[in-house]
Image 1 (tube, rainbow, N blue to C red):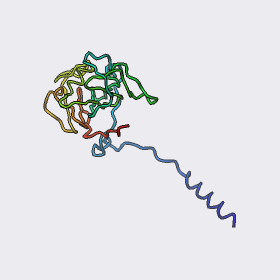
Image 2 (cartoon, rainbow, N blue to C red):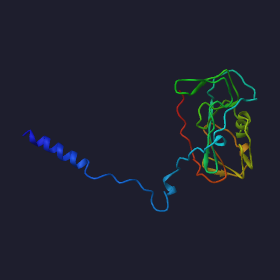
Image 3 (cartoon, rainbow, N blue to C red):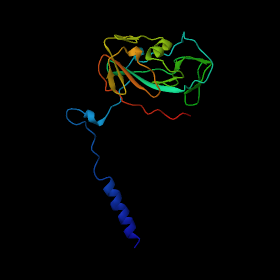
Image 4 (cartoon, rainbow, N blue to C red):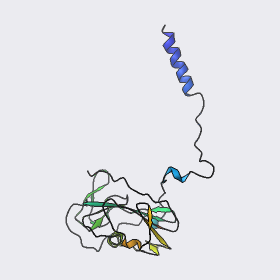
Length: 194
């Protein structure tokens, strides 16, 4: 009787390792776009990872978390551009997870992580305000140090306006691209507030 459980275990183990798994291969012609938006790698070099740098904007005391948040994604030459943590903050302090949790003072827009989430407290701000606080350039034919035609998307839909004039609204999803098309996300899953 004790042989049956042992025999069943041996048969089960042999069946599990019998044939090697097939390696995943992209279907001919590439992955269908209907499956969704795919991650885009961050471009190599300093042009794709500009620093937060000091801000010349007014800086006031207060919590670094904003009442509102928008998500901004930047792409150049079909590669992601990192929006750094620490934009609009003087002497940021980080927790054990390297997330900014406090600062000596804050500007009207700021970033706490390199995720593209922009924190702010007042209505009426635009993407131009983010770039002004960051000390970077944005226009119809300029995104940071990249030149060419700039395209902008809000909630996944192309918009025909100067990208700098796009309003920062609570939970907005904004994508700005130059030098090639990357399928824009229509929404962003904002993490819960701590």
